[in-house]
Length: 276
Ligand code: SAH
Image (cartoon, rainbow, N blue to C red; front, side):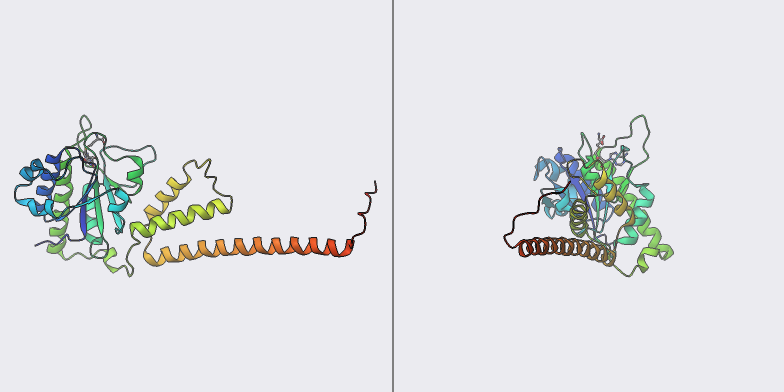
């Protein structure tokens, strides 16, 4: 049996419980078991149970959380499924590439595959929590699949990729990587730190942020830092903060010294008149 224990399917704000049940069934058909529901509108539900049929165990062990951030906090690879292209395009994968990435990386990293709401999909902030976007190349006349059908297509590609790998004994580059990728939580802490330092050095104006943080997020999503690289960057930021503080302290001490010298030398004498 294929083991996709490290791969979770995340459904965001699903409104129809039938879709949750059908998604659970699709997952079980394809050998996946980890389901996370972000603020489902109606769950638990008899309708979901009815549509899950023999995948009831997946519904029963589903994790229900309050935010997508919480859902992906321990993940090193997060991929969002979306039918739409965005104004600032996010790194895009085909379902096949998505599957080969997931299959290669799931040994070392927890992976989340994120699906949006039936009516409006994933919003931009949610997509920005993803390293990649995956798009099923459906017909442009009507490219938006039913949620559970989209889950099925992506899970089927995963299974095909895993079967191919098992059969051909392929060895991917990622398998040889010596470090785990940074998790969602570590990356979030890094972005907060980066933003704080950029504000401190007057590079970033939080009152006029433009798209700086969004672009920083996209840059680091593309690179996908490992834990070691993340620690180095955090260390650099900490040193910048430390040096800024040292410099400020030094300036303050020098100013205090100057004031003191002035006080000592004037010794109560009247200030010298300005000579023109
Ligand atoms: N009207 C929504 C589509 C929602 S369909 C929109 O404009 O985004 C529900 C979810 O199924 C989507 O959020 C996405 O995760 C998935 N999905 C549907 N069609 C897809 C496609 N062609 N490619 C990738 N994901 C798709």
